[in-house]
Image (tube, rainbow, N blue to C red; front, side, top):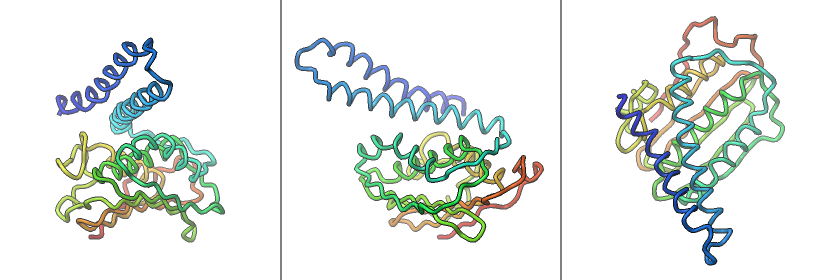
Length: 235
């Protein structure tokens, strides 16, 4: 497992090193344009986001920190994540569709942890569409809960893997890249926010992750450390 983690961290860092060396080598050339430099920097940013995301998931999985609750705008978090993922989406020919409810109330949550959940789901969705597709993010109010959907038109998840989807360090060669911590970390964060995740997936058509979060919750927001069942799977 340690070798797998080291490999996943090393891959994006190697990419950054390569682009840095190319940038240093070509920056003094008369033919090297600002657009080319911007493209190199965008690629480096994308690789660093991958690397920092993995490290953050590892740390959060080890710590399982309680949420630092403040008033939070879910739509702002989604927009921030999509800005960071924009280059990766373009590179993979993924069309991003936003259907965000502008009248959505703010919720009491940890914005950093929710941004990590959103990032994990968006990255997984993009990776599930290697030949391009559509990534749709929706928000709405469902009674006293906020609802966030991250839907892709990728290859979907098989029924046997749906049962293991949120198991730490579980991954498949095709459906889940990396060391298999992103979804497990996201699941834990949503539980500690007294929320739940509903996964709907059809092989060959795509997957939809639906996150439900209470608008208001007491300080601590982690059910006093007790685990609650927060995952529904639908094929």
